[in-house]
Image (cartoon, rainbow, N blue to C red; front, side, top):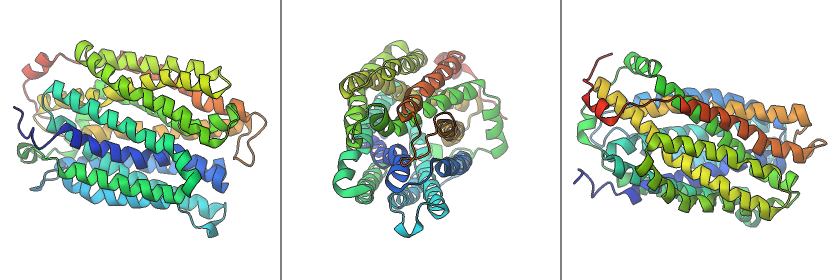
Length: 436
């Protein structure tokens, strides 16, 4: 039996992903919509704020990962960081949706938007880097790791249903501020309960501390690290546009009330939950790499029908196909990352899970720059500036935001994945440890 199996129960470990998703997806999906449509902040100022946030967000990932890998306490390497960062994440996500009315809609509001976007994402970064780093440590057997990962990704989808699909209905009843407060408190409670039930391996905390230059060299010289990161980059760009684009697609492309975003997002994410079991079985049968490529291609192709629908029911039916693709990609992401980590540990005899997760995140979080570029293109090509000034073709702008640009991005993601070449597990095990 795997050591610590009775303590590190997959269902409890997965609850943290549920908590991170509830509050996280609310601000990712509705942050831009809230500030443009509800308050009236210009899309240009939001795009500028996203650029500043993306630069900081990219650099705080490797810092958080490196510090986490070097941490040595009797509670482990990850738990102290999680216990410190979760309150920051929860509080800042609540304040993000609570701007003072006295700020108006100009520079003051733009500064507030940017500051609390950066604080929220900083807390989220430290939490997620340390949480994801626990996966390859807590579950050493690949099948059990796949089981734990599939369960937590299913819980992420449930969190997405709440944080994305139910938010329009909840905010219609109690407003954005009260919704952010309720979801933030629930999120924090779930994450803390989950983390307190995880026991890190003492031998990992007693292992050699990775050096900064050696870790950077290990990342820089690993071709698979760059290819996986680039593929993740384009997928994260796509998922961000999909989430942010749903309310705009409903309002301008389908010309329906904002609350109908609940039905489209529910069709996507509810269908993704049972699909997770299908992908879990396929990973065990076909392997991580092949299933990852299939899922990326499926997601890109599933977006095509969305462009040609003009009413809610066909959009929801097309959304089911998108949900299957999202489930496939999310089921494979951290499994792919774990193979990279185990390969590095086998080669150099040093555990640096957080450094690798943070290094990948450093690149993927730059996808915010892609989303900012798309927002600027919407303004340049279609004159879409804000809810008060949506331009002459807001419906076309919404379709490009949610469908056309994401299809192109997923094509690049698939191409990068096709170049990845992993060694067989036996070859990794036979490779003697080396020093950098």
